[in-house]
Image 1 (cartoon, rainbow, N blue to C red):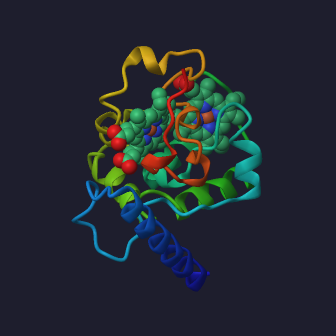
Image 2: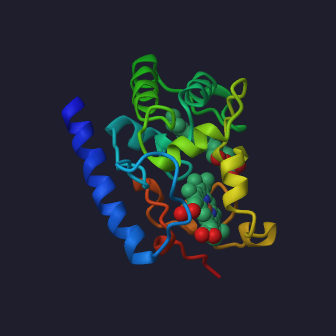
Length: 177
Ligand code: HEC
Ligand code: HEC
């Protein structure tokens, strides 16, 4: 398992180095170590994909730290006004999967930045409430997020077609009309 993870990290760093060169986008760069990938690695779990994408897109585990996922998973009976409860075994498996690949466990620059943007004593339930998110989207207006083709800021997929795979690269961003 460990070797496989290292392999994934290696592959993502090589391919994202390519992306960086191609787009000339060194703006992200600098701190954070040379060998680490920029995009989040693509991860999957059958139960997570089945249970967490019926009402909205799949939010990549690398978008929130473990403490946030634990809180999301502990409160599924009152999940943003919905009852998203699961049986105990499924809940435990998905919680483990999210924790293992969470922003503070995933070795890529975006996840590290997200973690760093959250205060030590905070555990936000929403990615869209993190400082990282608001800083990255300060040029997107509230009216844009409300477009029919988008719905809300929480619908990452509308603008980042690689979102479920953890790909938020600039070359993949397209804001629908
Ligand atoms: C019964 C429907 C339903 C299911 C099933 C569901 N969710 Fe949600 N989820 C919601 C709603 C509604 C929101 C709020 C959406 C909004 O404000 O636009 C939400 C929001 C979220 C957000 C916050 C997104 C943001 O704004 O940053 C996260 C994270 C999340 N869900 C994770 C999960 C996970 C993990 C699972 C699987 C265990 C799950 N959800 C299953 C209905 C659901
Ligand atoms: C209305 C379209 C839209 C939606 C919806 C949206 N984004 Fe973005 N996102 C953008 C734009 C535009 C940028 C800024 C690109 C730039 O200035 O380089 C951006 C930037 C980003 C970046 C940084 C990319 C980089 O290379 O610097 C990340 C990460 C990101 N978004 C994640 C998310 C996540 C996670 C969600 C959902 C919770 C989301 N976005 C929802 C349009 C959107």
